[in-house]
Structure formats: C-alpha cells, structure tokens
Length: 239
Image 1 (cartoon, helix red, strand yellow):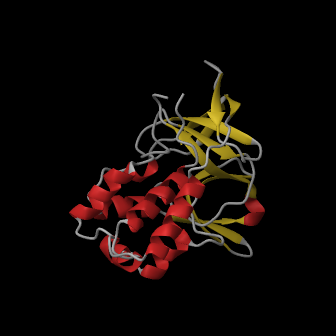
Image 2: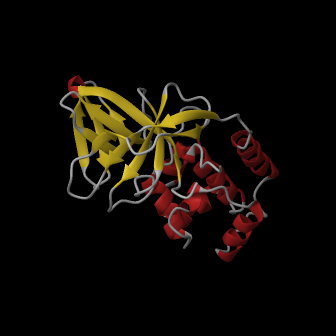
Image 3: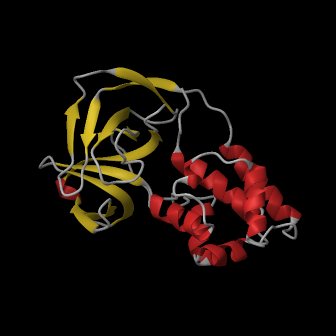
C-alpha cells in the first residue's frame, strides 16, 4: 500500500526543489505572487509555517500545474524542466544556497517506519451540511500511518463538494488531540458536538481562528473547544 504520508513535508520538499531551480528565492516569490517574507515563513528552520492547501494551490496555479501537484513526491528532473519553462532555472544560484536546499530536501526524504491503525470512523462532510462523525460499521480495516503522531486516529471521508484531503473516499489521519500550527489543515471538535474543518490561522488568548473549508473565517472560543485534531496525513481512495 502506498501512503501519501505527511503532506506538509511533501509540499515543502517539492517547494525547496522548485526554489533550487529558480534563479533565487526572491525571484521565485515574485513568480508565484507571494511576498519574499511570506515565502520565508514556510521555509524557516525554526517553527516554519505549514504549507496549507491554499498556498499550495497558489504555487501550482502560478506554475500552471495541476491542482494537488505539490502534494505528491515529484522527480527532480521534472521540476528542473518546469522551472526552465518559466525562464527561472537557477544555474546562477549560489552553491551555498543550492547545498542548503539539498540538505533540507534530503532531511525531509529520510525513510521512517510506518505503523498500522484501525480505520473505524466516517467523517460525513457535504456542502451546506454540518460535519458529523459516525462509526464505520460496514467494514473495519487497518491502514498505515506515518510515525511520530501521538494517538493517531483515522477518518474515512464521505460526502461531496470539497477537494482533498476532504474529498469523498479519502482517508485523513489526525493526531487525536494536539496543538495545530499556522497553515495546517485541522479538525476542531467543540463541547456542543460541532465539528469544524479547515486551515488553522492563529491562536489568541481566548479564541482560535480557522479558515474553514467553505472559505469563511471562523473564530472559536477556547472555552468551547473539546479537542483540536491536526491532520497529519491522508490517503487517496485507490490506495
């Protein structure tokens, strides 16, 4: 079984390779229509911002690539051709910068053992309807999950109207309860049994802000939150 483990690391690896074959990080930021400082937030060595689905789509749209292209490991030679087509191939980039990108990419590519977890829950998610979790009573199976997730839990997506990882048939793997970082896709469960999904924006003293899957900014009071479940990986339906 092939797993698209840790989509954020995969996106970052691909992004680093795209930048490697650009003339400079600044030129790449201009190419995708992102400010230089904004781009650096995703590449910082200390507490980097997660590459959420909206920023990933911004990159693929600017480079005229299919939606979701950034989410799967890409061949370095293919990336080199893509950047050459945009006339930004980074042969003039400094050896130090290219070596730094190589080191970061290599670090993200290290192989880690996988573990099995049961897939017992369905997350019902459709346009215009409240999100709902039900037990998968038809079939319970085990799936592979990436290491390093505390108390992983898996949900099979059922519904229509949304792109991956919330697309019908996909499986998302979450940390049952944990802290989300800016840009990370996240599920939030409230004490009144509501469920919210979307990109985690920021946390303040009394509330958490979420860019919901419907494109609306939602502020949720911390006192009303039962748990936060950051999405760590997802599986395509044919896996």
